[in-house]
Image 1: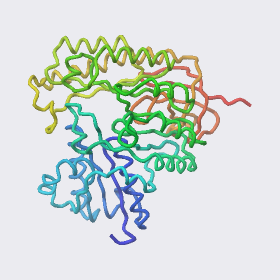
Image 2 (image 1 turned 90 degrees about the vertical axis):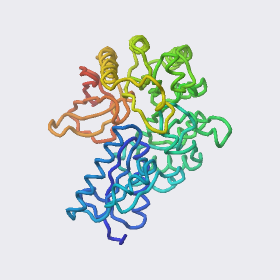
Image 3 (image 1 turned 135 degrees about the vertical axis):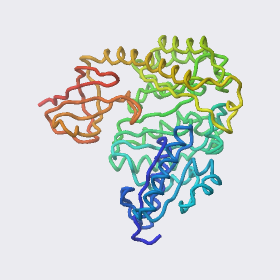
Image 4 (image 1 turned 30 degrees about the vertical axis):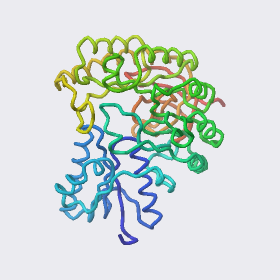
Length: 423
């Protein structure tokens, strides 16, 4: 590449992928490459996802779109990076000859490089680990990302301090399973200790959000840190995938309904008012109607404040691929719809509990059409995946402002609030 070469990136998939994209751009910028929107680029990079079938399809469509632009002369070179390139290198080289280079996934040490942030500066992701040691039977991530590796604690704290100096208000800590952090370095999971150091290093950062905690390792020490540190969002993101013991065993989740319900009771008691977020899989192989109904009943009993679901995707290279009793696609879709319909009703009830209460709202952006309306989030809402707080204010606000707003109304998954600063 010449120094004046313009580079753009399309980042697909999860926030962990986004951090990798930012790291790649940071390295290119340090070599005097000009970072531009992908439509204005000479060199277009697509950082792909290959977690499930829909993600693979989206990645392939993106590659085909870039090939079309290259044929038209709009871009000069195409680089395909990330999980799809790591998982299917030979197939991609054979079928996409117009692509100039294929690059697999980055290892955790690449995060030493200063990143070129793609998120708004007030809300940033921090990746603390790579790979995974869990052997969930449906998941292809260990085959793509490799074994679990923790990022060095000193490296993490140095980056926290850099981000803090930039004025970051929300730090979203990510990894395939952050509760494993430190096991390979210290001989045991050490997320609680890391969080204490992060809090101590964060002067300007107001919210520290933990994304994906395996319930198997959400222990008393970690729960105590989450409940006791004011800067740590009271947002417990622990994907359960299912609740039926037989299905959990087939998923190789190493837990049980009894242990899960006990953990939820413990969290509710130790962290009052916390938002519990989970994700579930609809239509896992051999799931019976009775087992599915057990899952739906469980959703109604627990009333998760936040819940997402996935339709089971049969992925080659996973143990579940070979399980008997694959559920028909139509049935999987119907079960997915049932889960989301059940959660929709629960969300209405959860939101109604905020009426006439005041909450902290992090301003994301100004509404494009309404001069007095702003889009924000509460500490109970992660970027991209959860709800929005619509804040009306006569005062001009800017992204990154943290305001105390009163909830006046609710929408399906969102809140409507008013901010009236005291004189």
